[in-house]
Length: 222
Image 1 (cartoon, rainbow, N blue to C red):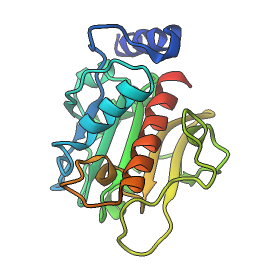
Image 2: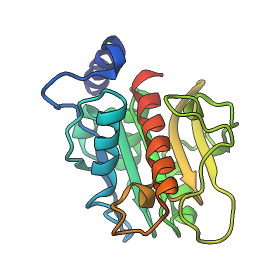
Image 3: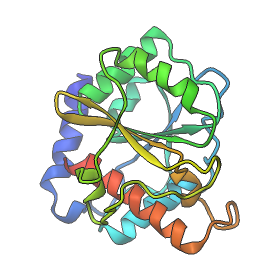
Image 4: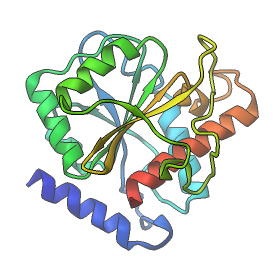
């Protein structure tokens, strides 16, 4: 039943022109809540809402502006085509949560993980529990995720500086399908927030929103 629900939602996206989702704005995307002590709520106030608004204005979409805060083990996750995960610290999935997330992704859902700095050592083993057979691999700059509405010929943009390391766009690919995109050393979510929250240059904030829009467009159409 869970797989059927999500499949029907995704079919609806694919059959609507220009990604228009109707007048009601009932399509929602989620912010993932997880255990372990990490701050899943790090960018909760303005990050995803700003990205949703950007997509509505620039991709002819009509998503609900308010994000859904969803527990990783909740069956309601199957009602969301796109789920965003962020934070700075520890991430722990129970066996049941890992199975639920795996089933969601195999059913057609999409997960975007955005390391807000300090998350990397914890999210990798957590996702290994979800997909023990897969490894995160850096996506080539020619990947479709960089070739949606906006073109990123050099791959993932660097938005917020922490360690002077290059931004990396990593993926988990199951049977040829990208089920999880992991933005590392980029901090896209900081770039989505209000300018008053993170004083990043306007051009970087625009790139962050454009890359986020690419992720949503990819998740809805590929």
